[in-house]
Length: 313
Length: 215
Image 1 (tube, rainbow over the protein chains, first blue to last red):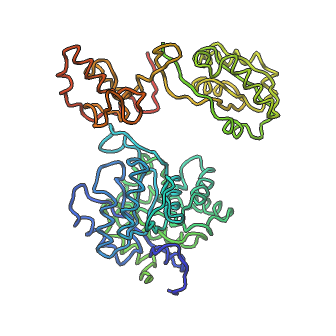
Image 2 (cartoon, each protein chain N blue to C red):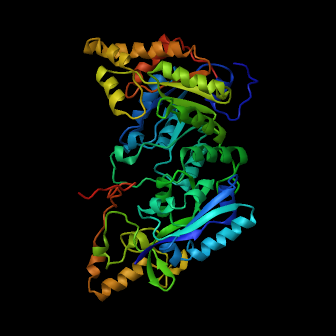
Image 3 (cartoon, rainbow over the protein chains, first blue to last red):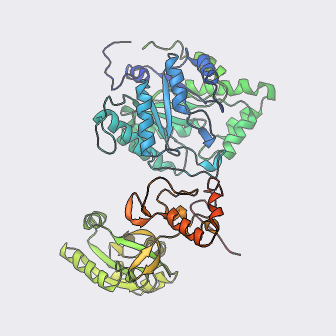
């Protein structure tokens, strides 16, 4: 990689994207306990095949080891973490404080999210916070980084230097507000986007086209999100039970059309084929592979999708 | 009697909300906002003056008897031509009234007030927030005083360390809820209630937005 690529932060993910490479990220879910080995074991499986590792933040509102501590474990082991932060559980004081905590370990990537409603998790009686929303969290990180200021206006000594990401769902309805919403996140300060899992490639291409028509693909790095199916049951569940997910009938049919023991293989094949097709879509700058509790399959997906070896940064 | 308590928005905010909208129809209400002097007949007249000075054309105005009533739409339709001329309806009622109007009329609505809380009248022109409709009432164990609402931190297991001569550290005008509760329980000889360890609150009592149908 050329040494003269100009970046806003020391993030390895940012360097790779700005150098023009297709980036590869993946995610690891922290354990429901305090054993750091669990998170390090997952990271170990994928470390040579991805540029950065997202750590989810109490995903689906189920209480887990926190994203920040997990990211610190990763950072200390020499990996590149992406700190996922939801605004469901913490107010602006806690969010800013945790951002500084992450910055004190030179965690250089953050993904700003709303977070699933607590009704879905293990504490449905809990109170949500949503003091800020995901747009405002994006703005907050940019304010802290670029202006060196807290939301309250005071100066930050040694501000965080984080590459700022956001999520986008190209499939939720109404479809016509999805690209304007992406534009709003970019205007708020998002520098990279990791999308919802893509199964309906035609619809994703339409979304990308609308994004390109507005020049958004040149203002933000869009990483296409993928989750391999482990079974036909999972495909049906995602289709029918997960709001905002678009799984076309032919994909479910393809998964159901092979014997149960061969379904995991079929799921991985679909994922690899999808990446190969998405590589051709103008504006796709990388891939975010969310292999849920199936991290061991990530290296094979990356290799067979022609994304290996990873560039050095 | 409980009232919806409101405060007039700043002129700057109203100007911003009405920017580009030249013709305005004004709506007040004869109930809560008349009592709190934020949206009764005098305030509507004053608003008419304020808008006219800024070069707006006020196409008409009315003070509805009860803006949050379902008949509001019918009442407003009597102002047909004046309403049809308007680019927006500036509604000087609480948000219940504003939303009732918005659901029943096609013209854009703009609120002129902020809705602060549902208040209990405690004296002439004085209103206190005593209930936040949390859905899981514990006042059977707190002497009929709600700490969820009255304590600034919503603490349910006794006071914090910020009690200052019976007042709250964040506002010397406001009572410490737990001093009130303690005094009341002492009077009732029910101080043992304060030893009850209240569990984390069930915020799912009636998840927001509340929606219910009585059969």
